[in-house]
Each structure stands twice: as C-alpha cells, then as structure tokens.
Image (cartoon, rainbow over all chains, first blue to last red; front, top):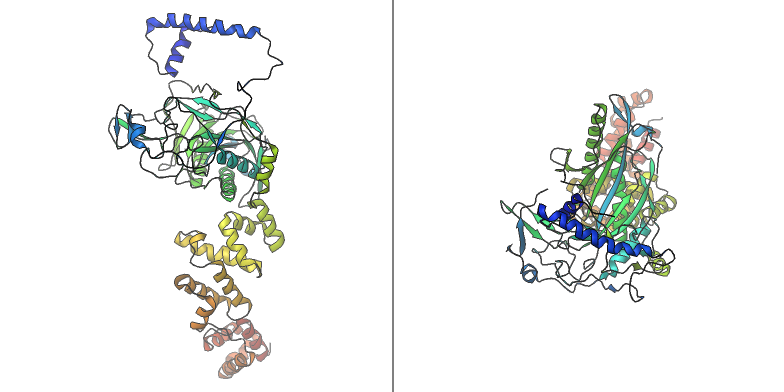
Length: 95
Length: 489
C-alpha cells in the first residue's frame, strides 16, 4: 500500500485540513513510512484468532432511559467563536 | 429479490414497456425519553440547544453510553417486521463533515446491524397482496438542524436533534409502483405505531424516507438508480416516484444514460432535481467505534420482548376476518390505526359486526375526514355509536332516523337513547297503528289503488304517503308489507 500525491490531497480535503502544494511530497513520504510500519502486522498469522474488542472481557454497559442531562444551552455554546440566542453561528452552508 | 415483473404495473414509454423498481430507506425516530447515547431529552420542540448534553455537542473527552430502551425498541421493531434479530451487532463511525454533526461522524451500524432480514405484507387498494423484503434495520444517531434563513451570510445550528435515536429500515428493491411504495410506508408506519416504537409523525419528521428509483425493460437487470432524499409525506413519496420514473424513461429513450446521483423532491413543483453535485463522491470511511463495545444480548432477552408484543395489524386483521366475518378489505381499513381498531372492536363486540363496520367505515370515517379529526378526538365514542346501533337492531329507530340521530349526537353529545326520545325519534312498529294509516291512505286514493294493481311501481308512492302521515316514524318494512297486502298484490 502506498500513498501518492492525489491521495494526500484527497485525505486532506476529507479532513478539512489546508495543505500547501509544497507540503504534499513530504506528507506522502511520512504517510508511507507510517503505513510501512503498520504493514509489519500482516506478517502475523491471525487466521485462528478471534478479533479482540476489549482489553478486559466485559459486556457493553447500558443506561436507563431517563433524562439526566441538557438544559445548559449557555454552557454548550460557550466556546463557539460566534453564537446568538444559544445557536451556534457558522459561515453559511447551503446544499 | 423479486425478479418477476407484475404486468399491470408496467409504464408505457415511447419505445415499449418499462418496469419501475423501488427500494426504500425509512428513517424512524425511536420513541424514548432520552437520546441514544446521552441523558439529554429526545422530546421535539425546545429552545435552541436546550436538549443538548456535552456528549451531544461532542465536547472533548465525552463518551457515549447506550440507552437500553432504544435497544429494546429496535428489537421490538425487528420482531414486528418479522425479521431476524442479531444477538451481536456493532456500532461504526460514518465520517463526514457538516456543521450540524459536531462529532464529525455519525454513530451508526454498518456491517453488523441489530436486525437482519424480514418481511412486510402489504395489501393494495385493488386487493392485491405484495410481500416486501426487509434487508435490515439498524440504530443510528440523528444529526442537528441548520437554519439558513436567519442571516444573509451565516447559518444557525441547533443540536437538539443531535444524538436522538433513529432506526433506519431498509427494504429490498421489491416495490414495482408508487402505489406499492406508498402502501409499504403506510404499513411500516402502522406496525411501528402499534408497537409504540415510533410515533410516525411525518410532519415533525419522526418518519421520513429516502427512495431509490430505477427503471428497466421487464426481465432485464436492474438499471442505474437515483436516490431521492428525505421525502416526508406518503403522498410526496408517490409523486416523487412517478416523476422520477418518467424522467428516467425519457432520458433513456432519448439515448441518454442515468447517472447514479442523489436528488431532492420539490413538493411545490412536483419534480425531483439533482442536488448540487458533490465535489467528490462520499467517502464515509466507516470503522468500528472504539468508544463502544459490540452490542450483545441473549435470545432469552429477545423472547421476553417477543412475548410482550401487542397484537399487530396482520394478526388483528386475521382475527377480525375470522371472528367478526369481515371482508379482507374492511378488516384492512379498520386495523390500519390501533385507535380505530380498538374503537371498532368496542362497537362490534356483542353487536352485528358487519353493521358496526359499516357505521365505523362510512359514517364515522366520513365525518372525521370531513372535519379533519382523528378517532381519538371523535365527539361520538364507541359506546354512543354502539347504542345507536342497538336502537336500530331493537327496531326502536329506522336506519334513516339513526343517521339523523348520529348527526345530533355528534353535534350535541349525550346518551343516544335519551336524545332519540327527546327528539321523538321512535319508529312505529305497532302493526295495528300502521294498518290504520295504510287503510286511511288507500281509502282516500281509490284511483291510485286501482292503478297500483297493474302498475306495482305505485306502491312506492303509497309508502311515501304513509311515511309522511306517520311523521317518518313508521317502520318502512312493515309499511311495505301491509300496503302490498292491502292493495291485493
């Protein structure tokens, strides 16, 4: 598996990260190094090993259906760069 | 997959017949107090961001904890759709970027949904029965809401819906017309409402559908489909499919090809149009959510929920047909809404069930539709309607009087028996009394009585005169019989 310049641009776009043209080649190299490192895992035969979903064997914890939270619109929007009447306000996005 | 074309459903194109193929994704909001992974309220209609916890706002370090009731509701829904329940399912992250999705991903289920294949039986108005396969049902989070009309250059984001539990129900591409699609959505809605797992309120967006439409020549492979997003009424679903099928047929017959794309239905214009095409195709990069363990429960847990399910529309319909002797169609109409079925059953029990069905379907529904009311707010309750029917069967009032009585009780309320007495509604069944009136009328009209012997239609005129003389209270059947014998017919 190797990453080319087009893939780097696409990943950057999906992650909404601005990447300048002169950074692309460098980033492609870094990503390929990471992938090559991870690729070592494929040397291990895991055909007979069940996928591990948790370090300790435990069942998913569930919550009772009770309203225990909310009612804090001020706190929720407090860190927003722009807010109005407890709305988050963002640059216009219309599909 | 259902590969047999149903000839009656084919659409005529300029170059021959076409078959429309429809599959649906129904998004149904789960009935619960709190959200799927947080303790904030799931109720509709609150000031902006009032039903939002720090989990729903995706603040750093917040972790999702699943709401057990949402799990139960999904299992119940799966059982109602006669579907396989998966004792182990997995939550995945569906990654995309949008301001009303603060996590940057939706927690959903991708490869391992909580509910697998099932089947819904749909009866059309024509009486035809269509079996529609269910592909899956999975649990996922709703997104927030963006408001675009408050400011010229900014959008306002309210996260109250963010994290509310949805069930996405995916059908197989088994539907072959807009009528089938509409009936399918209505049936799924009916089942969920019976179960109490979704309130089915399409105006508030509790139930909405994405509709996949393609066309093909009968017998050929599936054509390229277009997905019409977020259609929020059953009528619009029908209009969207009809429009989209015609559009695709025209494109292909003109030598073009269909692009797989997402479209929007514009109810104002009754047409679908392409959403501004994305700069690149969606790439959701699904992967298992590391914050959540697989969702596991036992078969005993499922069995217990199954044992507590209410009687569902199909079973209720079968019972109405076998116990009450109703026609398939009447039974289908009566079971569509649980409130109506309960109303009908209360009226029919201990009475003539077909007479009860006629009154509920024709008179009650007619009146409810006229005033835009639902059965819960009907001014005439089942015991009142039952009493009206009793008065008919006892012979106290005629069918005609019953219609008048129904109107009076509808407007003024009260016990129909008392209302009938107060308005002097009592048909005369005393044969002696009717006989006297018949004798008077016949004696007063000797010419007509003579003519009636050769022209039996004149009996109708005599019936009218007798009814008039008795103030409409004589039992029409008794009048008819007595007249015939009096006139020597």
